[in-house]
Image (cartoon, rainbow, N blue to C red; front, side, top):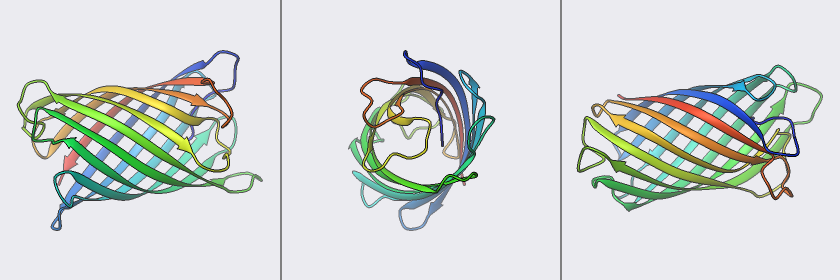
Length: 226
């Protein structure tokens, strides 16, 4: 997904909304399949754009300490000004559960690698880029003794760091780092609702040392475990 604004001397601010619905299917071999359609849009702070994506993730849980996952995401970005694009993004990752979700405090460290293929609906040539992503996250149950309990309200805090490993792509901004805070409510095992507020600090070249834009995101998520 392509986000950001035109370059300015000081970081330019934008506000975006993201909305997603997760369909999660438990599989018989300690695994889940998640299908996640999502709609994102720029509300203010630049030339309007909309992004429509679907993410399909297979996750395997070999034990209580480690999770591994692989996914394929397709994302189409429509811009009022600029070039529309299609991104095809396979990715793989691993998660280390430092403090287990059975406890009130759940802490994990996640790493993943994105393979990003871009097709532009113009005369521009297609492009490819790869990046590592590292994310620590903590979830704290506010009213239960376990993250796995129902009718459970949880505080969620995380940060994510993006490490570009090869050529720059034709993207308005290359994400540098992200922080977020949110509330997650697990009503039952089947239904969960979440709101997150994210801040993305971005740069538009690999050489930039300071953010060239700051994106504020209101993120709404509903999850249904089938």
